[in-house]
Image 1 (cartoon, rainbow, N blue to C red):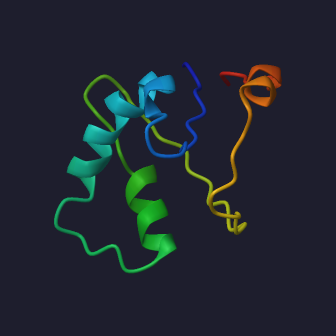
Image 2 (image 1 turned 90 degrees about the vertical axis):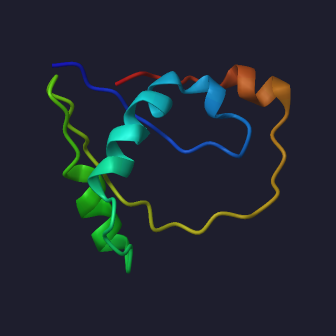
Image 3 (image 1 turned 60 degrees about the horizontal axis):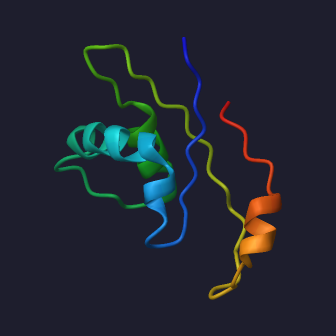
Length: 85
């Protein structure tokens, strides 16, 4: 089994997270037609996503509120230790 963490990045930066593009087509098919009425529903629908090749998605909700519009310098971004889990 291969484990992978997926984080949602600001608009325009998803190109850095190639797995996101492959996974979200399956997530969208899984919740097709279900109303996304609350966070619990969204988490359950995402976590229930599978495909024929054995895709399994682990979800954890981050309830923290983040400040909007924060700019991160290139120097800070280069200094991050990003791990693929």
